[in-house]
Length: 228
Image (tube, rainbow, N blue to C red; front, side):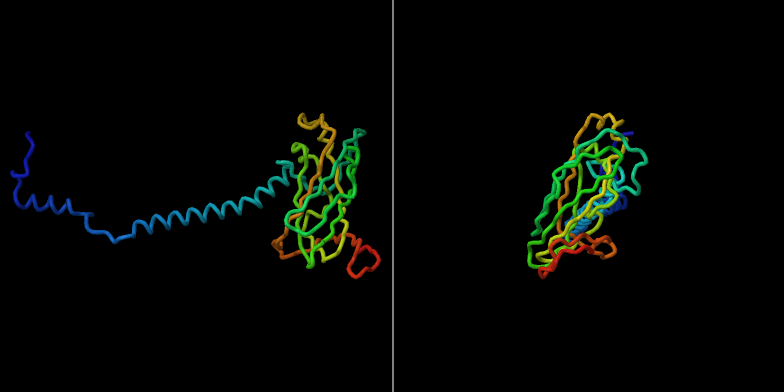
């Protein structure tokens, strides 16, 4: 069968074809397509930002649970086994955007693996108003994060320090015996525990003060030191 030319079609058929060709070709409101694209891009952007903020606490919880990325784990009980082998624990302290002086009260400690150690850090608020900070922490080498665990630490909650006040924060920790059997850590003899204080925001319950208050070394008004 040969091709049919337009001239062979009846007037009625040609009218139907022209009507079909005009479907969807009518004038579109100006700018509507651009607005739709912009709206989709905006939703995608805010969705990614929200996902990024949500990922931060989830990532932190994952690191604290697994010791990943050098994050120290929170322990509920000390080990039942203490080894003769010792490891050197070094201490480091840093501050970001807070008018605080933050220092470890000991440079290092030698501790038996599985035994508990006690270290202190001193903080002075050199600002003119109360400030609340939160200490983030990690250890080096990163592989030791799964075995360096803390029973008590000022880093578990926000800390508020009055202007001119100096406080001492205790840290109770241990190195789990699994440290000596892990291929990535068994040859390590030194662990560095590092803290960095950042300005804090209220936690989920709105709390700004630690559950177990630190020792006040230099209280306001020049009063003698006392323990809370």
